[in-house]
Image 1 (tube, rainbow, N blue to C red):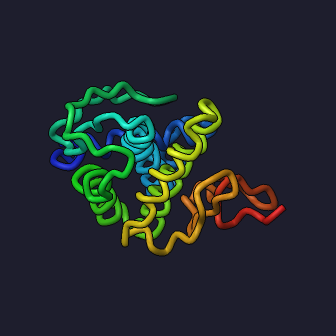
Image 2: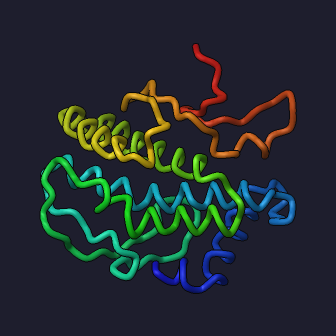
Length: 201
């Protein structure tokens, strides 16, 4: 995955593929680059964060988050295959830098700079991915609800996520929007379940 940050063509190819997938006509030119870049970012970081939260909730050893230690297959339409290397055990309270540093952090900085997406939006994507991982784990394995939420809340305590006030769980609301709403024409508005734009029910 280091190629995503070292070879501009690799990331651009991924963003254009996401653009085409988001376009009703399959034309990447119809989608704002920063919308596609934000969606690309959310998909990438979610794939790194979700298994990390799951492994930590089980008390197992995490995988190495450095991009040179991660091998992926660049596919759309679901979780992409990911091959990882083992890292020292972190138990149920992972250090935030271990999870949000070289992998998620580098991708976030790069996409913010290259596609002019607000870092606040991208770190909001990260917060959303952290919460979503805990929610999905709790849905599939109710006995892991407390542990997965504990892990997710520990990750959300990172200073880079300080603007995200939500508590982990189904009612979590992020403090920013991933920009996906810009794909829909008024008066319709496509928003995610944890979007800041979602009207409280």
